[in-house]
Length: 243
Image (cartoon, rainbow, N blue to C red; front, side):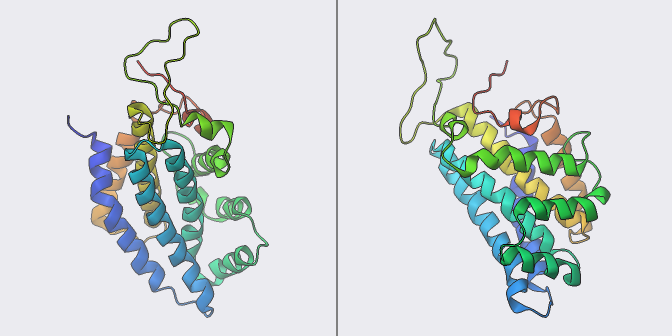
């Protein structure tokens, strides 16, 4: 079966984009060495988490994979701060490092000072709506919650529920094709979001920018998403049924 176009584009973009981001962050020349290193660490954490999330997803450990997606969202926030002008980014990084700013407060600062120039999110919403909703939607996956538990159940393809009889399976490696595909969409969105953040801050090569636009358009049309009809908290419900 052919890969969806957005997946082909993710394969093309992910590692080169991490390389572009790494080069940019390594050249960060702030006066405080510790603050220069923080965004680099966040980028490494992002790629370690997305790589581990892909592996656990393939093995059917979907709840663990979702925990790692949440880590990707949070680390992207710090990567983005590292791309700001040093004199401004250092103030935010220092307060975050000392525990004086939460991730939510950092995102609020980015919303006020940067996101208005980013344009739209995945559909017709603003970047602030896209990023803010997605961050809130993955928050339940910070803990072992009822939402996270839901990603542990696998329903065999084509099986219909009869009466009150449960057809769901549980186990240490219970692979659910639909859950796996939906998490893969989230991996692609993480890649696309990193590309967009780099592009909006002038750090993505021009030859990649058209590919990023195409990837966003392909993701927005994915049948594994609602096309913007649902909030991200609903998009990330563990139990979804499609025609």
